[in-house]
Length: 123
Image (tube, rainbow, N blue to C red; front, side, top):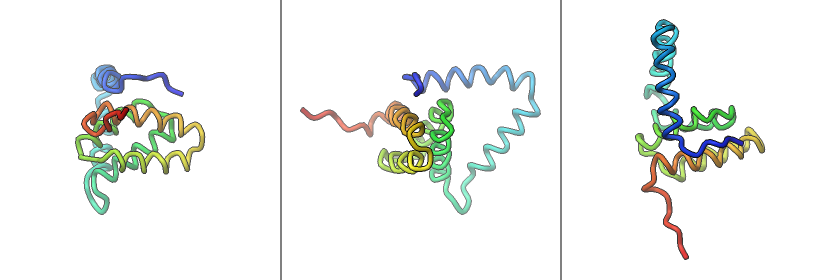
């Protein structure tokens, strides 16, 4: 299981580090960015659903950076906590125990990205 506790800091660090790749490998990075933009563009499937799919795959692939970036995108797109949790349930179903460990991390990441949706603790 991942030891990431701050997904916002992780995504900022990844973004900072990929600047070096953009400088040294501009064609590759432009190609990746174009593919990302095309894949996530709304079409028959809306952008939020595509991000939910990406989060599920990120969990199943055990990718902390993916979890960080896609939970932040989902918060911006207005995803609900329930939508995220249902997506994580499918990822766990498809990925078994290892996916469950990363689904728990994705809960924390989405809660960091959309703290207004975290239920208040009841005594």
